[in-house]
Amino acid sequence: MTNFHPDLDLITEYAAGSLALAQSACVSLHVSHCRRCQRLAGELRNLGASLFEALTPVPVGEAQLHAVLDRLDEELPLAYVNKKVKANDTPAILQRLMRGDFSDLSWKNIGSTLRISYLKTGDPKHEFALYHIRAGGRIPEHTHRGSEMTLVLEGGFSDANGSYHKGDFLMRRPGDVHAPTALQSEDCICLAVLDAPLKFTDWKFRWMNPFLKLRSA
Amino acid sequence: MLLVTDIIDGEDFSTADPGGIRTDEWSECLALIAQNQDRAAFTRLFRHFAPLMKAFALSGSTLSANHADELVQEVMLKVWQKAGAFNAEKAAASTWIYTIARNCRTDLFRRLQKFDTPLSADDVSDGEESEEAFMVLHQKRSRDRIRALIKELPNDQAQILAKVYMEGKSHTEVAGELELPLGTVKSRVRLALQKLQIQLERT
Image (cartoon, rainbow over all chains, first blue to last red):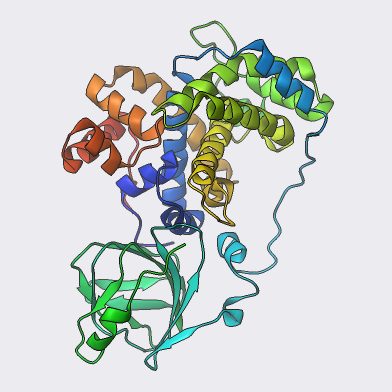
């Protein structure tokens, strides 16, 4: 069970389908293993369905119906088997975005404790990256120029506000400063979705700031 | 037809809606399509849902009439293809169809913006599904409750929900369009959700 969740506004936008692609992938990864948020997302979808049913219908001509009927033969109903295949532990969304597992990705080292791998979601406004922090390692203190969603995929980390474990979801707003540290016991892998680059405040890393560009799409 | 939900719940699942149509007529149509590729059942579904889909496609109207028609066709074809995956115990037919329409529209928006992505809206909405029986029951109750309460929402709140859900706009976009502060939009959405008794459970 996770302890840190997206807020109601975010889940509402997620359920309505209006969240940006990279962000909705991140929220979805949380929702898929959080019963509480799953229940809420389900209710919000019911709300969407009620609003849908209450729309004033816009007439659709018979020609449209026939055009669809003509295409039914090419599109036979698919046979569905109960899909409960769990080949590996990597969430399905991430499997679509990468080949192999985390160890097959190309990682960029930032200092000795942090490695980053950028995945392409196609979302032009958001960077979607995996952070690998070595057990006990600390990410240099940084601030956010925009918003950052973080989801813990493996292990956990802590900062001044708490400690976060697998499935926990965090939203950082512009101006939040923090220096997350991975738990001592194991390496931590997080997903981070950013809409503006980070900015290191730790003087040893400030020289990097001009080079930190948002790697979206 | 007695559905498993009736047994679990002990309530009548197939309540009549104001039009006098049994709401599970649509589940039956989906079952007929899945079992017999029944075109008459498909035609009934089309006549009822295609006009709603078109209205949905045109809400917020960034889509041209051509794209709206294309979307209606695409969604109806998906309904035909995927009918076998519909499970009346887990969802109402209208919720299931709405979800397909919502996801197809999101994908169409992204295609029109020339997104090159390996992810479809279906991939991203999979997290919503749950197999657990208590959740299924909970969702059925929530659907009935929301349907009843939604009629009592004040106009300003109903309007904002319609923008968020039917027009697929983010809170920020709605705020810009209605010239309201973002905080006002968020609080109206939250108030509406509160009235519909949709809230975060405390853990």
